[in-house]
Each structure stands twice: as C-alpha cells, then as structure tokens.
Length: 153
Image 1 (spheres, rainbow, N blue to C red):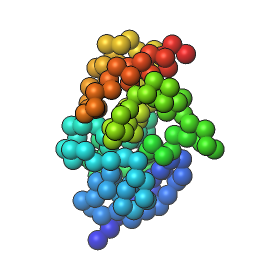
Image 2: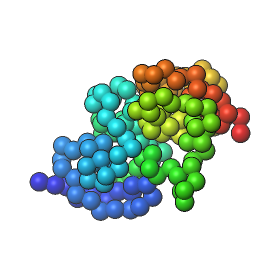
Image 3: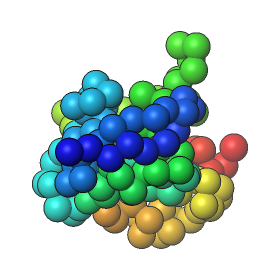
Image 4: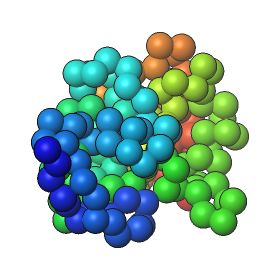
C-alpha cells in the first residue's frame, strides 16, 4: 500500500508514492537515490540525517515521508547549483570543518537553517543551535569558524 503525495524536493515539484510507515530519510535514499543524508542513530539524536523542510532543519529519520505533503524539502544535493557550491559548503571546505565526513551533510544543513533563522549568530547561539548535530571526530571548532565567517559576511 502506498500514499500519493505532492512535495517539492530540491526545487522540483513531484507527485510521489510513499509507504505509510516510510521515513523521509528512507524515501530520499531509497526512492530518489539522494544518498547525501545518512542515518547515524535512527532516533533523531545525532543530526546526520538533517534536511531542511520549509527552510527548517529536520531529522529526516524521524519524519514520515507522507508528512512532506505540500512541503519544500532541501537535501545536501540541492544546495549547489550549476557546479557552484553553496556559501556554507565553501566555508566548510575553507575551514576544513570535517574529518570523516559522515556528519558533514547534516551539519551543513543545520548551519543553513541557523543562518536563515539568525544571519548573525554569536558563537554561543551557534553552539546552542547546532547542539543536535554530533561530530564524532570533534570538528566543532572548525564548524564554528565557518559559521563565524558566514555570520560576518
């Protein structure tokens, strides 16, 4: 059994069939082959599966795909355009805000949400906002340096 929904994924409006119990993360990875969002914990604690839904960061492992009805979903794949990286992606590269890279897509999406919500966050505000995104390699200092640069622009 499937449910048909109308949603926008990375700027492309789509009518898609989803299983009633399918998470947004499963749908993105399995049905659309958007592999950038990854499952870390499966319970919404680590943030590695973070995507933007109507501009707000969401743990896609917790959201049902059917709840994307009428919403705009942006994944890491939807940030770059015509081969040009998003400013957040560029800042992460410049500040080497990654090691293994597992958390990086979710962290970048969370930073996009942060800057949309608060374009000039203090370090404390950034730390608080990003507290739901865990980096097992400990690149928090580099992530905060990238946020600081973006906030000063």
